[in-house]
Length: 310
Ligand code: UDP
Ligand code: MG
Image (cartoon, rainbow, N blue to C red; front, side, top):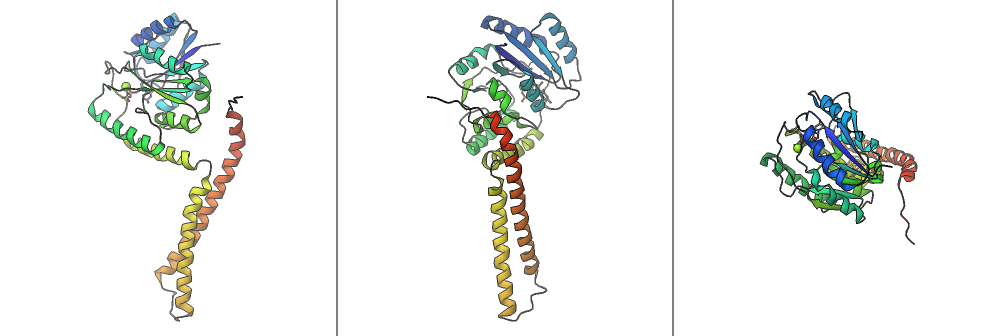
């Protein structure tokens, strides 16, 4: 049985890897627990893979997963978490910005009974163009989800094994790991961590991530609020549209039969038909959603674990 798994997503980080490895090894040896270090090479085009293989030759605890192309950090993380065997899994960036010496802080929180521990880069060493959007993003996410942590996007995290196995990360959802975990009822803690400037290599993310981050926020909000009851979402839109269409229809009928107007060329007639059809469509989509959820719910129930207390 492995005590601790370290999972590191790597994309073109050749200069950082040797230093990262030696820092990790130093601190892990001190902990006196069995461990593995899993590097997930996310389709690097530099010498990262070669460097990793050199490291692996020297240390049996090092494992490498190589992805065939660059799939993005979420996929890299998600595969790493899936393969990790440790009771506690720690993720951190490969660029040396997260200081491995903080690992004991995370373990302490897990010992206290938390299921997920999230790092907070309270003195973030990044350019303002990165810090400001991140501040806004964190603030919005915290408000929309009701989770009171400061740094959702910090890669430095510790998971109890079952948390890592039970949350599904895809697309850009790695930013919302705390949200996904919270939603599943796991206990979340936050620890302040030292953050260092990037010494080698370049950041892999540009402005576009703001847009995708925002779309993901909508996804996550939607998932949290409606994933288990799609009819409530689609159905309410459907019912509103249907009722508006219905009322407009009555009004048109009134004009036709009471006032004897000709309604055949009224744009309102088209709108009425549109609203009624849309309404029925939305309600049907909601019902389809319910069918899908009830299918997957059966599988899901098996993965939710119950901690019974006497
Ligand atoms: N990363 C990855 N796949 C990607 C982009 C980044 O695995 O497509 C890794 C990268 O090697 C690093 C971590 O994700 O270990 C964070 O990337 P970066 O430092 O560029 O992001 P930032 O710290 O600027 O948010
Ligand atoms: Mg970085």
